[in-house]
Length: 363
Image (tube, rainbow, N blue to C red):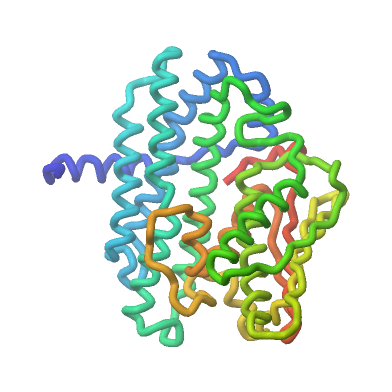
């Protein structure tokens, strides 16, 4: 355990770096810069990350210290803060990146940081769950609780940015990338293919929990492709399809009627690529629609305890799937809208911006 003077010195350095201005990077720049990675471009990228990541990580560590309602003191939140402090120390103690060997060692180090932070979302969810119990449940929330929603939106959006920067740099070291793939960005991504894989994954979860799963019908041009980040689209599709499957399954599991399929429609518009996920799972009451994008409510009766497994699956019971999916869509300038008809079903509209045209700095 660090001595008090050392801990104080680290805290002062975190405060100093957290006050620095972060530098945004556009998707277009990422695509052009990574199109033909060379030893020199990878070295330049590593030097940039060596200076940029401590700023972003320090900001998140500072955020975790000043949360309202005592959330900062919850054991799960303290654990996440320790991860951020440890990652800050790892990067700051790494010497200047001067050559190829330095760059490869730096890449291995930030790869480990990315692994360390894998369970940040469910761990923070556990902290929020602890706070909810202390406050007496969602019906007893005090005024000002919206500050936690705003913090989590900012925190998770920044986390997406940090993971995108690290993931892009690490992926550029792939010696044999697929055609059209630049780091994490697939310039020829087929949304129908991603929808099919995400649907199969979601149906597997549904089968595991209920013993059966509704079908998923997918409509759209099978030859249509556009530039996007495959893991991001998979996460969003998986969460939305999983929610729809659960709603349909629970509505029809004791019925003599056959469960209707979940329908996915992919539309190629001039401005956006839009994916609609429609179900006949009974819909959401109008009074509950405002809550589906918040982090303090869950439709699950018993949210799961943290088990350290796949992040997408662990998020299920916490009710984080929809708000996190909206952040992933918004990260690249898109959005997620939910329209529901109580007594019938729900339509989710996932609007995705075309990445190749954007010169706006990412969060």
